[in-house]
Length: 134
Ligand SMILES: [Zn+2]
Image (cartoon, rainbow, N blue to C red):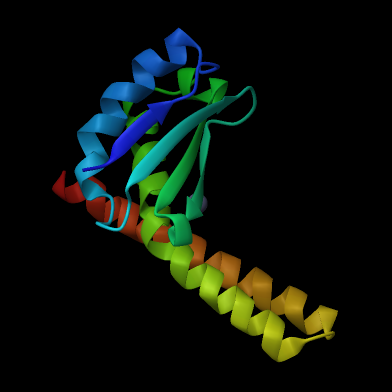
């Protein structure tokens, strides 16, 4: 059971479009997720901060959600939820790269950019799969 906590600064009009979608797709989150905390910010549409160690997701919803249609909002949440699967892998790989590459900042920058690109692509592939079967 995932506990969803809405912070009071989420505007009612954003919550009205986000809440049904979040609850509709909650079952797609990995079983390690115990808490989903929902925050608000003015810019962008949504992003997620994955705290695997604490079994927690911090989802930030934003005013940009109101600019898109229902499909845009659905795909946005499916993508952010897919990060719950890919972020622990990405975080572990990034930590390992930092230890292995040490002070070689140029190599680290190249490796991190390559990692970000492939992880974002994998996240979107997973989100597409979610959309296909849900
Ligand atoms: Zn992403």
